[in-house]
Image (cartoon, rainbow, N blue to C red):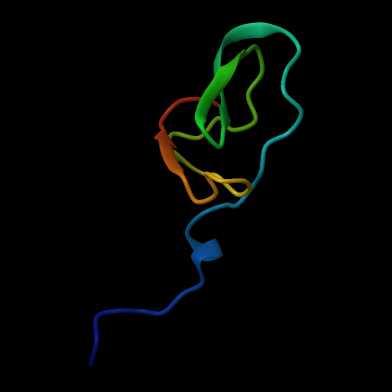
Length: 70
């Protein structure tokens, strides 16, 4: 008997995508496909751990990890 259990990825993490870029500069990193695009005053995700995966363009599939609000 295997110790492995098959589950859907959505059972262990939450999927989301970015919103409109904040108009006011701040200290919270704003990620684009190439990495940090700038800094804003609002966050979309306030998780302890966030995995960012580029989903469009030449850098589609690029992966970044952040452990603070983004």
